[in-house]
Length: 496
Image (cartoon, rainbow, N blue to C red; front, side, top):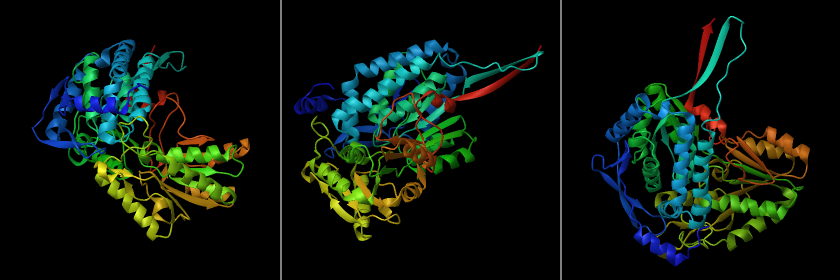
């Protein structure tokens, strides 16, 4: 962690010059002149005026990406040369890590410690991983008849539209952009309107790293205008989206209404976290459950928002989580001691509070939290919140809240736990705590989730894929498997 005090971060924030122009074809572009205010959730203050893009800006960015793909050097470079360019970009991200972390913290409310240690580390490591992987892929030559030669080559898919959310603005952008670039594609990145400033810096750093004009373009604006324009664009070959399931459906429709582009979706979650009475360490299980739901203000698609705990240990575990919620330091994201910052904005805070009100009215028991806090700051802060006596039919147990709100449900046997865990339209992640190896294997296979953590939560690295089942989406980010989204397989049969 960069060792700066709260006052030093505040001083740097005052000196930060944030530009809100699009980055298209290797240069900053104001677009049509329309702008919107990027507001910091830590104090409600305007950070910058950001270009409000629409169809014209999306057209310009896609045209630049199309030229760079069809006639530019990037897809034709030796893979090792593409890899070296991505490694240069990773080095620049590392060099500007403090500035980028500060931008992320200011624009979406993440604690500066998390922005620097987790968000930026992930972004740097992602570009390094795919930079090193770029020349490690091999084509195939299947064994065929003696008078023929078959070649299976993996080729870049074309222009990629990447539409990413605000909760991890650089991490998730990196998960889309880095493998697409490593494969030889060109990219149009549209960040969330809530977190555009860090993505714009990424685009400028890519140009500084020597990526040719048009290879990585960044267009800012909202989903119904800029996002829709990218989704419908006939010159976008692949669309990669992370966000809500409702918006994911829009992108599938955009593909059907345009050129049938491939659409890869990482969508919502309502992840179960199962604690059995034979968990190796109940205190650790409770502490991890608390960390999982309150980390990043609960604004996590994988957040273990449904805690499924055996009746015999339910009160012990719940009390430990409630105790941890009371100890958690909620405060200014720029204070290195802060453990939970601000929710991304007033509109989102209002939606989370509505879920809390509904939970109370439906009969769930509020054990702690449930109200906004630090109101004198002008920021969007919420107390860490825990409900128990939740039943599966309640809104608390069914809908993704995307905030620091935990629902505790109980079960009496393992079959009931698995049934409760799978009783959701989502299938992104799950957790399981047990000392029994056979139980760990059997339950992990039975859970309908793209990732299952056993005796831990949110662990892993870039070597393992990430993505969901059911209405949590399709395809995988991270690992070598991510390259499958941005490449096409071509068969060449040569008769000898």
